[in-house]
Length: 437
Image 1 (cartoon, rainbow, N blue to C red):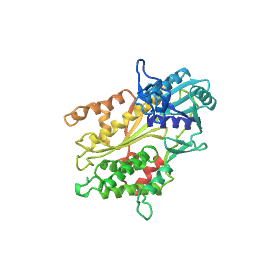
Image 2: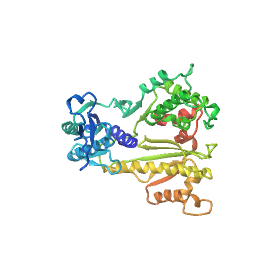
Image 3: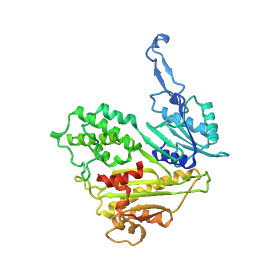
Image 4: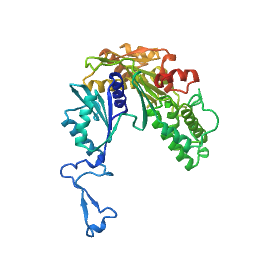
């Protein structure tokens, strides 16, 4: 299964080049797999068919079927062989990304279990589609109106694509007892942090806890694909999957109410330039990182917020609690910057694995001057020795002219959206970076 990053990169390329997109769904995908040499698997006679076989007989499987652990990998191997026979190369950065440089230019396919998304000039994509349907029986879904559970709205004139999830939004109203009244303007109370664990006597009932897990799970899917502005509030909610109080339930309902009230918002891809398919074109990858120091009152761990962009189009957005306790604001910012740099490197490798070029050095924007200065000098002292591995990692990237860190003001750092619950005006400003005006 391809990564979220690869999907966003391919869709951004599709917009920049004005590509044609085609979606195929392989029918009975897991029935195409072959067993490894020498592997044998038997099954009991299926219910309803016992009358056709003698007592005690079992069946030898000749191919994989749904329900087997091997089925998904076995189908993927068949898919690899199919693309190889079509003269497609598998990316070394993402094993579910396949590409071919043809007379029609670059043609790209990505596989998401049994869904195959192709992008490129229309003639090249339709040729590949014909080759795929010759090998597998497919549902030809055609133009991409829906993908990975999202509704896609493409504006050809603006070269933009917006992802929304109206079905998920409707489930919030249908399945949860949301409060009456107008929808809030932010997904969480500005300035507040949902960091107080529930005492045993304050925990909701098992039935309510199950509902809380279900609702938070839906929000996790929504923040991943279509609503990046709720990342921080959902990160806080997800910490209480095993012990929520009514305060946590109310916070979840507020986030849902916000999403319904702002139903037209969604992740917006709108690259800042076009691409004519020239392999010598240099794509621009940028990143922004931020942190909220020692935010967790129990563990004193900080929160990282990061985002990366491909020619102005958001590719990665993250909000996560850092793995270890940092000793200063600068160190916490350095941890977030390093994580963002790793995402930028992966984006670069995806593009370069297809024979495309990335402009170097890539720019990483950080709103802490101390963290930026640490990446720009080679002095070593006792006060920074404990972070030298991360420090040297970013220094080496600068020396190799791959990534260079630059300072950005806090008010201009959109990744601030992923570290704290912002007040309305600042929230709206940063939200527009990912969801449009």
